[in-house]
Length: 340
Image (cartoon, rainbow, N blue to C red; front, side, top):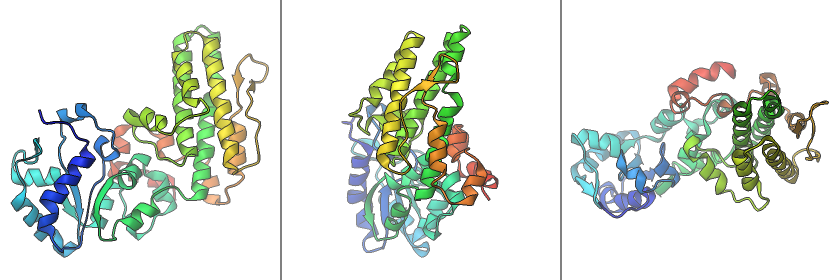
């Protein structure tokens, strides 16, 4: 078994030693981009048990696609640093290990639209955050200037869309924050735990949004959240909420988390200051933050009437979590009818 190195390092060496020499002076961009744990730098030795090895996206002008592909194919080794490069036919190897295409074609395949030609409101709202991450967080080994403007444009949501998405995320919390106590009250402890776990996930995603950080898909959500750093103890509060063996501890941990993300909201300075302290839900014994207050405050800062017209349903990651939708541009672009 070869010594493990992260795919970003492996792909960098593969580009420098195998691919770059045959491309020569051909204008191009090359990087480890798109879908996968390795693109985000989350891969470990465990990742190598399937579909893992050196791979690259190479972007060239249309007339250079076929010649560049032919030159790369001619020099591909069977393996690189002990990891397979060729498996099956040589065409299969190129298809899976080195993709040679144009910027527009690759963007259309990965996002469902060509972001180099502009990004519409609908594009922002219907494209999963994971797809943006595959472009802005992937490792780039060479760029003749064609990719950098796209990465800059996609680095984060436009301000009004961000505020609207933030408001929608607070709305998700508002929808369920009293249910943890209510399910406990009727003896449904499993239901109370499930509601708590859902709220913990929503608070994690809210914290990422507040930090202007795209959320990866579920497997790496906790890792991305942990890498934010939490000197205020938000991570500990959420861990306590999930681990709590009784309702009192569960509620105490969650309302602590609510107060902390409320304070983070105030620190952003994008709305009037809101009291983040917990409060009762009407006359019931449930403690909540009344998250809808944050939704209303954020929506009041959004002037785009189209966004207001959608209601607080949010971007695609906020109303869909089916992998077959979120990983498939042809599937999620069908939802464009929602955002006209």
